[in-house]
Image (cartoon, rainbow, N blue to C red; front, side, top):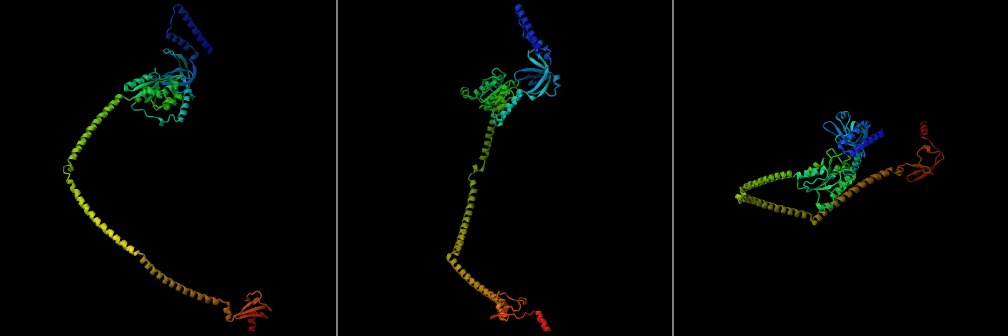
Length: 488
Protein backbone atom coordinates (compact mmCIF):
# COMPACT_ATOMS: atom_id res chain seq x y z
CA UNK A 1 0.00 0.00 0.00
CA UNK A 2 2.78 2.43 0.89
CA UNK A 3 4.71 1.70 -2.30
CA UNK A 4 1.56 2.22 -4.33
CA UNK A 5 1.04 5.56 -2.61
CA UNK A 6 4.60 6.71 -3.38
CA UNK A 7 4.32 5.58 -7.01
CA UNK A 8 1.00 7.32 -7.39
CA UNK A 9 2.36 10.60 -6.03
CA UNK A 10 5.49 10.29 -8.14
CA UNK A 11 3.44 9.71 -11.32
CA UNK A 12 1.25 12.69 -10.51
CA UNK A 13 4.28 14.90 -10.00
CA UNK A 14 5.83 13.65 -13.22
CA UNK A 15 2.62 14.48 -15.06
CA UNK A 16 2.60 17.91 -13.50
CA UNK A 17 6.24 18.49 -14.42
CA UNK A 18 5.56 17.42 -17.99
CA UNK A 19 2.67 19.80 -18.20
CA UNK A 20 4.79 22.56 -16.76
CA UNK A 21 7.68 21.87 -19.11
CA UNK A 22 5.37 21.65 -22.12
CA UNK A 23 3.55 24.82 -21.24
CA UNK A 24 6.81 26.64 -20.48
CA UNK A 25 8.10 25.63 -23.84
CA UNK A 26 4.92 26.78 -25.50
CA UNK A 27 3.58 29.63 -23.39
CA UNK A 28 5.94 29.71 -20.27
CA UNK A 29 2.86 29.34 -18.02
CA UNK A 30 3.16 30.26 -14.31
CA UNK A 31 0.97 28.49 -11.72
CA UNK A 32 -0.61 30.26 -8.78
CA UNK A 33 -0.37 29.11 -5.19
CA UNK A 34 -4.01 28.10 -5.35
CA UNK A 35 -3.27 25.87 -8.38
CA UNK A 36 -0.53 24.03 -6.51
CA UNK A 37 -2.65 23.82 -3.37
CA UNK A 38 -5.65 22.43 -5.27
CA UNK A 39 -3.44 19.90 -7.00
CA UNK A 40 -2.09 18.65 -3.69
CA UNK A 41 -5.59 18.57 -2.20
CA UNK A 42 -6.80 16.36 -5.03
CA UNK A 43 -3.89 13.94 -4.51
CA UNK A 44 -4.22 13.73 -0.72
CA UNK A 45 -7.98 13.94 -0.38
CA UNK A 46 -8.48 11.41 -3.16
CA UNK A 47 -6.18 8.81 -1.61
CA UNK A 48 -8.23 6.01 -0.02
CA UNK A 49 -5.45 5.02 2.37
CA UNK A 50 -5.39 8.48 3.98
CA UNK A 51 -9.15 8.63 4.46
CA UNK A 52 -9.16 6.38 7.52
CA UNK A 53 -5.90 6.14 9.45
CA UNK A 54 -4.90 5.91 13.10
CA UNK A 55 -2.29 8.46 14.12
CA UNK A 56 -0.71 8.54 17.59
CA UNK A 57 0.98 11.47 19.21
CA UNK A 58 0.75 14.07 21.95
CA UNK A 59 -2.05 16.61 22.20
CA UNK A 60 -0.97 20.25 22.17
CA UNK A 61 -3.11 23.40 22.21
CA UNK A 62 -6.56 21.85 22.43
CA UNK A 63 -8.94 24.78 21.80
CA UNK A 64 -12.72 24.74 21.53
CA UNK A 65 -14.32 27.62 19.66
CA UNK A 66 -17.77 29.10 20.22
CA UNK A 67 -19.04 27.03 17.31
CA UNK A 68 -18.25 23.88 19.32
CA UNK A 69 -15.52 22.74 16.92
CA UNK A 70 -12.17 21.78 18.49
CA UNK A 71 -8.81 22.55 16.92
CA UNK A 72 -5.63 20.93 18.15
CA UNK A 73 -2.05 19.98 17.32
CA UNK A 74 -0.84 16.38 17.30
CA UNK A 75 2.92 16.00 17.69
CA UNK A 76 5.75 13.64 18.55
CA UNK A 77 9.42 14.24 19.25
CA UNK A 78 10.20 15.39 15.70
CA UNK A 79 7.02 16.44 13.86
CA UNK A 80 3.54 17.83 14.32
CA UNK A 81 0.28 18.04 12.37
CA UNK A 82 -2.79 20.17 12.88
CA UNK A 83 -6.19 18.64 13.54
CA UNK A 84 -9.87 19.48 13.78
CA UNK A 85 -12.82 17.68 15.37
CA UNK A 86 -16.27 18.92 14.45
CA UNK A 87 -18.90 19.61 17.07
CA UNK A 88 -21.08 16.56 16.35
CA UNK A 89 -18.09 14.18 16.61
CA UNK A 90 -16.73 15.92 19.69
CA UNK A 91 -20.08 15.31 21.45
CA UNK A 92 -19.40 11.55 21.29
CA UNK A 93 -16.16 11.79 23.27
CA UNK A 94 -16.32 10.34 26.80
CA UNK A 95 -13.70 12.79 28.02
CA UNK A 96 -11.90 15.50 26.14
CA UNK A 97 -8.11 15.18 25.84
CA UNK A 98 -5.87 17.50 27.82
CA UNK A 99 -2.68 19.33 27.05
CA UNK A 100 0.29 16.96 27.03
CA UNK A 101 -1.69 13.70 26.89
CA UNK A 102 -0.71 10.98 24.47
CA UNK A 103 -3.62 9.86 22.26
CA UNK A 104 -4.54 7.87 19.18
CA UNK A 105 -6.63 9.75 16.59
CA UNK A 106 -8.78 8.08 13.97
CA UNK A 107 -9.45 10.35 11.02
CA UNK A 108 -8.69 11.36 7.46
CA UNK A 109 -5.66 13.31 6.29
CA UNK A 110 -6.55 16.39 4.28
CA UNK A 111 -4.97 19.56 2.93
CA UNK A 112 -6.76 22.74 3.95
CA UNK A 113 -8.14 24.79 1.08
CA UNK A 114 -7.00 28.18 2.29
CA UNK A 115 -3.87 27.52 4.27
CA UNK A 116 -2.56 24.62 2.25
CA UNK A 117 -1.58 22.83 5.49
CA UNK A 118 -1.86 19.15 6.24
CA UNK A 119 -4.37 18.38 8.96
CA UNK A 120 -6.25 15.41 10.30
CA UNK A 121 -10.04 15.46 10.29
CA UNK A 122 -10.63 13.55 13.53
CA UNK A 123 -13.45 11.03 13.82
CA UNK A 124 -12.61 9.89 17.36
CA UNK A 125 -9.79 10.33 19.87
CA UNK A 126 -8.65 7.61 22.27
CA UNK A 127 -6.57 8.64 25.27
CA UNK A 128 -3.58 6.51 26.17
CA UNK A 129 -2.62 5.74 29.75
CA UNK A 130 0.83 7.37 29.79
CA UNK A 131 1.37 11.08 29.38
CA UNK A 132 3.03 12.58 26.38
CA UNK A 133 6.74 12.98 25.90
CA UNK A 134 6.83 16.76 26.36
CA UNK A 135 4.52 16.74 29.35
CA UNK A 136 6.51 13.96 31.03
CA UNK A 137 9.74 15.85 30.45
CA UNK A 138 8.11 19.00 31.84
CA UNK A 139 7.02 17.20 35.03
CA UNK A 140 10.42 15.58 35.58
CA UNK A 141 12.24 18.90 35.28
CA UNK A 142 9.67 20.64 37.48
CA UNK A 143 9.99 18.07 40.29
CA UNK A 144 13.78 18.23 40.16
CA UNK A 145 13.99 22.02 40.38
CA UNK A 146 11.21 22.20 42.95
CA UNK A 147 13.11 19.78 45.20
CA UNK A 148 16.12 22.11 45.02
CA UNK A 149 13.99 25.04 46.23
CA UNK A 150 14.13 27.11 43.01
CA UNK A 151 10.35 27.65 43.13
CA UNK A 152 10.13 28.47 46.85
CA UNK A 153 7.83 31.42 47.52
CA UNK A 154 10.30 32.78 50.11
CA UNK A 155 12.71 33.53 47.25
CA UNK A 156 10.20 35.73 45.45
CA UNK A 157 10.98 39.46 45.42
CA UNK A 158 8.60 42.37 45.12
CA UNK A 159 8.68 44.44 41.96
CA UNK A 160 9.84 48.06 42.27
CA UNK A 161 6.92 50.47 42.51
CA UNK A 162 8.55 53.17 40.34
CA UNK A 163 11.03 51.59 37.90
CA UNK A 164 13.09 53.94 35.75
CA UNK A 165 14.49 51.38 33.35
CA UNK A 166 12.86 48.10 32.20
CA UNK A 167 14.65 45.29 30.42
CA UNK A 168 12.79 43.01 27.98
CA UNK A 169 14.05 39.63 26.77
CA UNK A 170 12.09 38.55 23.70
CA UNK A 171 12.22 38.35 19.93
CA UNK A 172 12.64 41.78 18.29
CA UNK A 173 10.24 40.71 15.54
CA UNK A 174 7.48 39.33 17.75
CA UNK A 175 4.25 40.90 18.89
CA UNK A 176 5.33 40.73 22.54
CA UNK A 177 7.80 43.62 22.34
CA UNK A 178 5.31 45.73 20.40
CA UNK A 179 2.62 45.15 23.03
CA UNK A 180 5.02 45.92 25.89
CA UNK A 181 6.24 49.13 24.25
CA UNK A 182 2.69 50.21 23.44
CA UNK A 183 1.46 49.67 27.01
CA UNK A 184 4.57 51.33 28.47
CA UNK A 185 4.11 54.42 26.28
CA UNK A 186 0.45 54.64 27.18
CA UNK A 187 1.02 54.30 30.91
CA UNK A 188 4.33 56.13 31.43
CA UNK A 189 6.29 57.50 28.43
CA UNK A 190 9.22 58.53 30.65
CA UNK A 191 10.28 54.96 31.47
CA UNK A 192 13.20 53.66 29.44
CA UNK A 193 12.87 50.23 27.78
CA UNK A 194 15.99 48.19 26.98
CA UNK A 195 15.50 45.28 24.57
CA UNK A 196 17.74 42.22 24.86
CA UNK A 197 16.91 40.41 21.60
CA UNK A 198 16.76 36.63 21.74
CA UNK A 199 15.39 33.63 19.97
CA UNK A 200 12.22 32.37 21.65
CA UNK A 201 11.64 29.15 19.72
CA UNK A 202 13.78 26.38 18.30
CA UNK A 203 16.88 24.43 19.27
CA UNK A 204 19.08 27.54 19.66
CA UNK A 205 16.52 29.43 21.74
CA UNK A 206 17.65 28.23 25.24
CA UNK A 207 21.26 29.34 24.70
CA UNK A 208 20.09 32.60 23.14
CA UNK A 209 17.82 33.29 26.13
CA UNK A 210 20.63 32.40 28.52
CA UNK A 211 22.99 34.87 26.84
CA UNK A 212 20.31 37.58 26.96
CA UNK A 213 19.61 37.23 30.70
CA UNK A 214 23.35 37.00 31.46
CA UNK A 215 23.91 40.20 29.50
CA UNK A 216 21.05 41.95 31.30
CA UNK A 217 22.64 41.15 34.67
CA UNK A 218 26.16 42.11 33.60
CA UNK A 219 28.11 45.09 34.96
CA UNK A 220 28.85 46.19 31.39
CA UNK A 221 25.16 46.85 30.69
CA UNK A 222 24.80 48.69 33.99
CA UNK A 223 27.82 50.85 33.14
CA UNK A 224 26.60 51.67 29.63
CA UNK A 225 22.82 52.09 29.95
CA UNK A 226 22.36 52.22 33.74
CA UNK A 227 20.81 49.92 36.31
CA UNK A 228 17.84 47.86 35.11
CA UNK A 229 15.11 47.83 37.75
CA UNK A 230 12.98 44.96 36.44
CA UNK A 231 13.28 42.37 33.68
CA UNK A 232 10.37 41.07 31.54
CA UNK A 233 10.87 37.68 29.86
CA UNK A 234 8.17 36.75 27.37
CA UNK A 235 6.77 35.88 24.00
CA UNK A 236 3.40 35.17 22.43
CA UNK A 237 1.42 31.95 22.73
CA UNK A 238 2.18 28.62 21.13
CA UNK A 239 2.22 24.91 21.67
CA UNK A 240 4.25 23.27 24.41
CA UNK A 241 7.12 22.53 22.04
CA UNK A 242 7.00 26.13 20.77
CA UNK A 243 7.41 27.34 24.35
CA UNK A 244 9.86 24.61 25.36
CA UNK A 245 12.87 26.93 25.41
CA UNK A 246 11.38 28.48 28.55
CA UNK A 247 11.28 25.02 30.18
CA UNK A 248 14.96 24.23 29.62
CA UNK A 249 16.80 23.68 32.91
CA UNK A 250 19.76 25.95 32.10
CA UNK A 251 17.51 28.93 31.41
CA UNK A 252 15.17 28.30 34.37
CA UNK A 253 18.20 28.24 36.70
CA UNK A 254 19.44 31.50 35.20
CA UNK A 255 16.05 33.13 35.86
CA UNK A 256 16.15 31.96 39.48
CA UNK A 257 19.69 33.38 39.93
CA UNK A 258 18.93 36.72 38.28
CA UNK A 259 19.96 39.72 40.39
CA UNK A 260 17.21 41.75 38.71
CA UNK A 261 13.58 41.07 39.72
CA UNK A 262 11.97 39.10 36.88
CA UNK A 263 8.49 38.89 35.37
CA UNK A 264 7.60 35.85 33.27
CA UNK A 265 5.13 36.61 30.48
CA UNK A 266 5.33 33.54 28.26
CA UNK A 267 2.38 32.57 26.08
CA UNK A 268 -1.26 33.15 26.83
CA UNK A 269 -3.10 32.90 30.14
CA UNK A 270 -3.61 29.12 29.81
CA UNK A 271 0.08 28.47 29.04
CA UNK A 272 2.46 27.58 31.84
CA UNK A 273 6.25 27.16 31.71
CA UNK A 274 8.91 26.48 34.33
CA UNK A 275 10.09 30.06 33.88
CA UNK A 276 6.78 31.14 35.42
CA UNK A 277 7.65 29.25 38.62
CA UNK A 278 11.25 30.51 38.80
CA UNK A 279 10.43 34.17 38.13
CA UNK A 280 9.47 36.55 40.93
CA UNK A 281 6.11 37.35 39.28
CA UNK A 282 4.11 35.55 36.62
CA UNK A 283 1.98 37.52 34.14
CA UNK A 284 -0.56 35.78 31.88
CA UNK A 285 0.50 37.75 28.78
CA UNK A 286 3.22 40.26 27.77
CA UNK A 287 0.55 42.97 27.85
CA UNK A 288 -0.34 42.07 31.44
CA UNK A 289 3.36 42.07 32.33
CA UNK A 290 3.74 45.62 31.08
CA UNK A 291 0.68 46.63 33.08
CA UNK A 292 2.19 45.05 36.22
CA UNK A 293 5.61 46.64 35.79
CA UNK A 294 4.89 50.09 34.35
CA UNK A 295 3.00 52.39 36.71
CA UNK A 296 0.18 54.40 35.19
CA UNK A 297 1.47 57.98 35.00
CA UNK A 298 -2.00 59.49 34.82
CA UNK A 299 -3.10 57.39 37.78
CA UNK A 300 -0.06 58.56 39.75
CA UNK A 301 -0.79 62.18 38.82
CA UNK A 302 -4.38 61.75 39.94
CA UNK A 303 -3.22 60.23 43.22
CA UNK A 304 -0.76 63.11 43.72
CA UNK A 305 -3.54 65.58 42.99
CA UNK A 306 -5.75 63.89 45.57
CA UNK A 307 -2.89 63.90 48.07
CA UNK A 308 -2.26 67.59 47.37
CA UNK A 309 -5.92 68.41 47.92
CA UNK A 310 -6.00 66.40 51.15
CA UNK A 311 -2.73 67.99 52.31
CA UNK A 312 -4.03 71.51 51.66
CA UNK A 313 -7.26 70.72 53.45
CA UNK A 314 -5.41 69.15 56.38
CA UNK A 315 -3.08 72.19 56.58
CA UNK A 316 -6.03 74.60 56.64
CA UNK A 317 -7.75 72.54 59.30
CA UNK A 318 -4.59 72.46 61.42
CA UNK A 319 -4.15 76.24 61.15
CA UNK A 320 -7.79 76.78 62.04
CA UNK A 321 -7.63 74.44 65.03
CA UNK A 322 -4.36 76.02 66.20
CA UNK A 323 -5.88 79.53 65.96
CA UNK A 324 -8.96 78.46 67.91
CA UNK A 325 -6.78 76.78 70.52
CA UNK A 326 -4.68 79.95 70.88
CA UNK A 327 -7.78 82.08 71.33
CA UNK A 328 -9.04 79.75 74.06
CA UNK A 329 -5.66 79.87 75.79
CA UNK A 330 -5.49 83.68 75.63
CA UNK A 331 -8.80 83.90 77.50
CA UNK A 332 -7.59 81.78 80.38
CA UNK A 333 -7.00 83.30 83.86
CA UNK A 334 -3.29 82.52 83.81
CA UNK A 335 -2.76 84.98 81.00
CA UNK A 336 -5.21 87.64 82.24
CA UNK A 337 -4.22 87.73 85.97
CA UNK A 338 -1.20 85.47 86.49
CA UNK A 339 -0.52 86.73 90.06
CA UNK A 340 -3.88 85.49 91.26
CA UNK A 341 -2.69 81.97 90.63
CA UNK A 342 0.06 82.40 93.22
CA UNK A 343 -2.36 82.84 96.16
CA UNK A 344 -3.23 79.19 96.17
CA UNK A 345 0.42 78.21 96.05
CA UNK A 346 1.25 80.62 98.93
CA UNK A 347 -1.41 79.03 101.12
CA UNK A 348 -0.10 75.61 100.19
CA UNK A 349 3.40 76.69 101.20
CA UNK A 350 2.14 77.88 104.60
CA UNK A 351 0.29 74.63 105.23
CA UNK A 352 3.28 72.62 104.19
CA UNK A 353 5.63 74.63 106.43
CA UNK A 354 3.36 74.08 109.47
CA UNK A 355 3.19 70.35 108.75
CA UNK A 356 6.95 70.28 108.23
CA UNK A 357 7.62 71.94 111.59
CA UNK A 358 5.24 69.55 113.38
CA UNK A 359 6.85 66.59 111.72
CA UNK A 360 10.29 67.91 112.71
CA UNK A 361 9.29 68.24 116.39
CA UNK A 362 7.75 64.76 116.39
CA UNK A 363 10.83 63.37 114.76
CA UNK A 364 13.11 65.00 117.38
CA UNK A 365 10.95 63.67 120.23
CA UNK A 366 10.97 60.20 118.75
CA UNK A 367 14.74 60.28 118.36
CA UNK A 368 15.14 61.37 122.01
CA UNK A 369 12.92 58.52 123.17
CA UNK A 370 14.93 56.08 121.13
CA UNK A 371 18.18 57.43 122.63
CA UNK A 372 16.83 57.02 126.18
CA UNK A 373 15.66 53.50 125.44
CA UNK A 374 19.02 52.61 123.95
CA UNK A 375 20.86 54.05 126.98
CA UNK A 376 18.71 51.97 129.33
CA UNK A 377 19.36 48.89 127.23
CA UNK A 378 23.04 49.73 127.26
CA UNK A 379 23.08 50.11 131.04
CA UNK A 380 21.18 46.86 131.38
CA UNK A 381 23.68 45.17 129.15
CA UNK A 382 26.71 46.53 131.11
CA UNK A 383 29.36 43.82 131.82
CA UNK A 384 29.59 44.74 135.53
CA UNK A 385 25.83 44.36 136.03
CA UNK A 386 25.84 41.13 134.08
CA UNK A 387 28.77 39.85 136.16
CA UNK A 388 26.85 40.51 139.40
CA UNK A 389 23.80 38.74 137.96
CA UNK A 390 25.89 35.76 136.86
CA UNK A 391 27.54 35.54 140.34
CA UNK A 392 24.15 35.49 142.05
CA UNK A 393 22.95 32.95 139.56
CA UNK A 394 26.11 30.85 140.14
CA UNK A 395 25.53 30.84 143.97
CA UNK A 396 21.96 29.73 143.40
CA UNK A 397 23.13 26.99 141.07
CA UNK A 398 25.78 25.84 143.62
CA UNK A 399 23.24 25.66 146.49
CA UNK A 400 20.82 23.84 144.27
CA UNK A 401 23.55 21.42 143.14
CA UNK A 402 24.62 20.77 146.75
CA UNK A 403 21.07 20.15 147.89
CA UNK A 404 20.46 17.89 144.91
CA UNK A 405 23.66 15.91 145.59
CA UNK A 406 22.82 15.43 149.30
CA UNK A 407 19.31 14.34 148.46
CA UNK A 408 20.63 11.87 145.88
CA UNK A 409 23.16 10.44 148.36
CA UNK A 410 20.49 9.92 151.02
CA UNK A 411 18.31 8.16 148.48
CA UNK A 412 21.16 5.88 147.38
CA UNK A 413 22.01 5.10 151.06
CA UNK A 414 18.45 3.96 151.75
CA UNK A 415 18.46 1.82 148.61
CA UNK A 416 21.81 0.32 149.66
CA UNK A 417 20.54 -0.57 153.12
CA UNK A 418 17.47 -2.24 151.65
CA UNK A 419 19.58 -4.23 149.20
CA UNK A 420 21.99 -5.24 151.98
CA UNK A 421 19.10 -6.49 154.09
CA UNK A 422 17.74 -8.44 151.13
CA UNK A 423 21.17 -9.87 150.43
CA UNK A 424 21.64 -10.85 154.04
CA UNK A 425 18.24 -12.51 154.09
CA UNK A 426 19.16 -14.49 151.00
CA UNK A 427 22.59 -15.56 152.29
CA UNK A 428 22.62 -19.36 152.77
CA UNK A 429 25.08 -19.08 155.70
CA UNK A 430 22.56 -16.92 157.52
CA UNK A 431 20.15 -19.87 157.28
CA UNK A 432 22.86 -22.10 158.75
CA UNK A 433 23.10 -19.70 161.70
CA UNK A 434 19.49 -20.54 162.53
CA UNK A 435 20.32 -24.26 163.01
CA UNK A 436 20.01 -25.62 159.51
CA UNK A 437 22.68 -27.73 157.81
CA UNK A 438 23.76 -28.30 154.19
CA UNK A 439 24.60 -31.88 153.02
CA UNK A 440 26.97 -32.35 150.04
CA UNK A 441 28.67 -35.19 148.25
CA UNK A 442 32.38 -35.03 149.21
CA UNK A 443 33.86 -35.65 145.79
CA UNK A 444 31.58 -33.60 143.50
CA UNK A 445 30.26 -31.02 145.98
CA UNK A 446 26.73 -31.71 144.75
CA UNK A 447 24.04 -30.71 147.30
CA UNK A 448 21.98 -33.67 148.42
CA UNK A 449 18.40 -32.64 149.07
CA UNK A 450 16.38 -35.92 148.64
CA UNK A 451 16.42 -39.29 150.40
CA UNK A 452 16.86 -40.87 147.03
CA UNK A 453 20.31 -39.29 146.81
CA UNK A 454 21.57 -41.46 149.72
CA UNK A 455 22.43 -45.10 150.12
CA UNK A 456 23.86 -47.18 152.95
CA UNK A 457 27.59 -46.82 153.68
CA UNK A 458 27.66 -43.67 151.56
CA UNK A 459 30.11 -40.89 152.52
CA UNK A 460 28.65 -37.35 152.97
CA UNK A 461 29.60 -33.86 154.23
CA UNK A 462 27.44 -31.85 156.60
CA UNK A 463 28.05 -28.10 156.39
CA UNK A 464 27.21 -26.20 159.63
CA UNK A 465 27.44 -22.52 160.50
CA UNK A 466 30.89 -22.85 161.97
CA UNK A 467 32.32 -25.89 160.10
CA UNK A 468 31.59 -29.26 158.45
CA UNK A 469 31.23 -32.90 159.39
CA UNK A 470 32.15 -36.04 157.45
CA UNK A 471 29.71 -38.87 158.12
CA UNK A 472 28.84 -42.32 156.88
CA UNK A 473 25.18 -43.27 156.32
CA UNK A 474 24.24 -46.36 158.32
CA UNK A 475 20.60 -46.57 157.29
CA UNK A 476 18.26 -44.82 154.83
CA UNK A 477 14.69 -44.42 156.15
CA UNK A 478 12.01 -42.82 153.96
CA UNK A 479 9.19 -40.66 155.32
CA UNK A 480 6.47 -43.28 154.79
CA UNK A 481 8.42 -45.87 156.67
CA UNK A 482 8.92 -43.48 159.60
CA UNK A 483 5.24 -42.72 159.63
CA UNK A 484 4.29 -46.37 159.62
CA UNK A 485 6.69 -47.13 162.44
CA UNK A 486 5.27 -44.34 164.57
CA UNK A 487 1.72 -45.48 164.01
CA UNK A 488 2.51 -49.05 165.02
